[in-house]
Length: 450
Image (cartoon, rainbow, N blue to C red; front, side, top):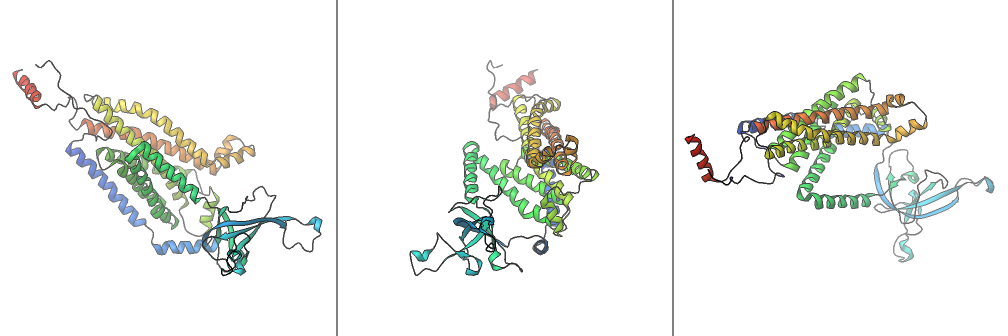
């Protein structure tokens, strides 16, 4: 017997896949393919046509005053003078108005639509250039909610060319133009992800962008056109989970287990949401936007919208939870290859308990943050906590947070059990790997002698 121990197989576990036997790998891939096919069928059967989207859009515009276009502009001038139309009122009783001229960056304002610009008049420097017109709008200078303007400030105007809108009211102030700040912040986000996450972090960003595309291209239009909310939520949720996991982590055993575990948790969330949103008799009118959607005659499934919201809100944490648990099983297996299924499961679940505690807290606080303004109003009204919680606007958030948390909790034992079973059944436990053929031959010889 050699006095020196054989060199063990040493490697980094950050990108190492779970060891799975061929039969179990085949079973995992079959399971993933089944989910993929079901997701594809669900998306195809509920994918809205462009004609259906156009029909909903036309119906909505008849009841909701949507702008036809957003026009970027700059503040040309800000003046304060007596409000128009007060010529017959005595001077001491006249009120002041703040008049703002907006200079469009992309459209030429017609004389009938505005007033002469003050700051930006090209003909002052070059007489060959035409006179420029700006949109004029008045604001209450003393109003607490009145926007603050400075010359040169970037804003967005709304443009309406619908019947009944006179030319002088076609352009209206809409909002500040924040696109450049959002772009800068997104670049900083990408830099931070790349510096600390390198290419794996950039793959995560690619998964995020793909998920957003799925939401914008499929989930939102399908819900708006009145498709079955539960089918859309499950199909879209599975597609989002697949994009986030496979783009970031690759097509391998660990990702298969994390994906199937996420789908199991999503089904749990969908079932609970469908049950409790029904028995608790939620109408779905938890916001002004939801009321507008119903009033527009789009036929949207409001309850399905609630279910989809809970699923999408939980997916990010679910993916993180399942990937972490599969990685925990992998690391424990590599450290203690002699562990059986029960030992692997118990050790990994202990790690999962701490993760659940922090993630549930994060999810609950995220829901609280989205309804904070509503909660403040209830506090101002001096209402008891039980009635605050009972109000639909708050009860929906509480229900969503609790259902999402249950789904996260289910994800821990589910993903841990799948990973531990796959590792235990792989046959790669109870011994240490050795790359030395001579040592292997020596050990076999000694076994034969015994």
